[in-house]
Image (cartoon, rainbow, N blue to C red; front, side):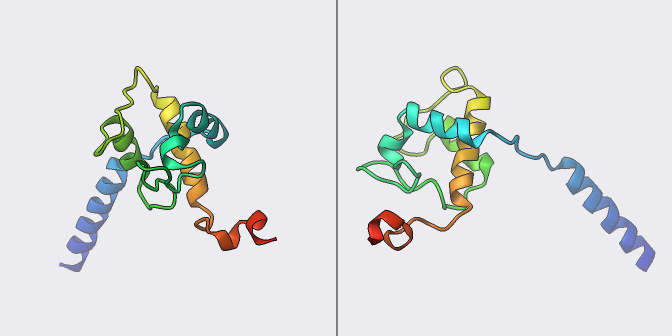
Length: 118
């Protein structure tokens, strides 16, 4: 009985691993340029921490890249949809890589922005 359970567990784990897809990596530097040049910063701030009257915080929010892409393509709020014709997948992946690179560090606050502490 124990060997059957071990075998079933191995099959289930193997199936889950085989079905899992990795999200394409992007170029964070190019993503930053796209984020700034396409005006994303106007609503979300230059570091993705939110800003203005509309845009929520999109860096440091813990969203997986698949959810970020879903929001870009089919936004839940006032943001216009960025279809693949407007923003090709490669560019979307680059923007997501940029936001994830921001999310890797501490959440920006006045205390950890050097110029504000002189």
